[in-house]
Length: 116
Image 1 (spheres, rainbow, N blue to C red):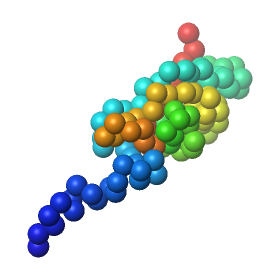
Image 2: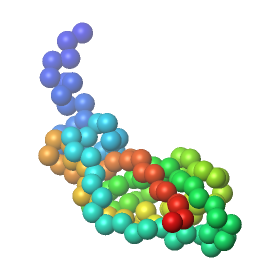
Image 3: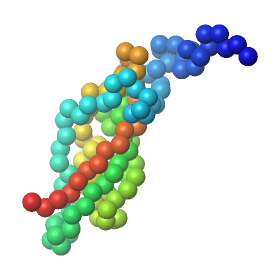
């Protein structure tokens, strides 16, 4: 079966890229963090000397703002997830691009919690 030029149009025309949600592996330029704030260390974890990390998946919009957050993993579980999610919702990014246009993207981010 000859697809002709159809394979180059699988993602639609230039206007359709605004609705695409891509992954880090599929974009020409990944998002770059511009602004971030450190998460608030949970008081109970600080008092007990607990350290850990949370791996998140962020949906970063074409405007560079975080639209959604999903927890992928947390060590230890049930301690730092809310603080990590609250912090990354305020982060700002230079958005990802695909074929010269900004696109929405799911990107993975690890937030570490350590006592110094």
